[in-house]
Length: 313
Image (cartoon, rainbow, N blue to C red):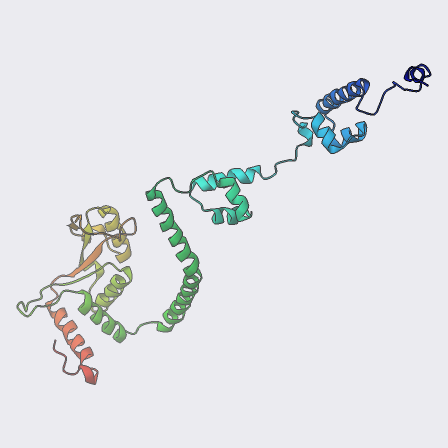
């Protein structure tokens, strides 16, 4: 039998082979791909819905949908966008990554990812200032418990001992008033033995009130004394004068012109603001005899102990 015979008898089959997809299969895939893309856009089916509908796997569907954005409803809600904005704001304010993480309750790595595009310091001066604030915060965190305990202990001590003092007897008041004047009042100098007028100066209202009680016990009225402020020129002199007059319980007419201190640029003053009212000078006119009495009581106090018996006045 010849080759031609085999051909004639149909021994050789020229039908389709399994060498590749047919044109009809390619057309069908293109149609399905187009339909999948349309359904992804409208009504916006999810990937799982499309895979189930067309019977394809994840890889095939990914290839079909290449270039399409997912429907809005399938996007995962970004619940922490507000925290990210807060982190950026804190970073702009100079907060470090650990501080941002602690403030917002997130991990340090998350805080870093949110703010890594923002430099912490834009200049050496900013870096120095940030480091200074950081050291101050560390000191505050370290010492705050100690200060609270110390302040509570201080209040307890004040309450206990101030109530222990009770009412002063006349003798006690004379002794305390004498010592207060000897410390804060004008005294005779070796080269000038005349003391016609006593003057007491202090900026502590408690000590001023104690001295006024003392001179009243000695027989002098507050209205018979004269008063004068020693105060810095930057202060509100009128307001300070009124405040001291109210404290002493005397009229403004008893106040002489204030002694005003001029500004010294080389001096760093800390006692400023509304609480600064200068020093009050209380003058006892024609008080030379009273000065002798104060001097004598002070000598007696100094001589009351063996160690002080030889004290020279």
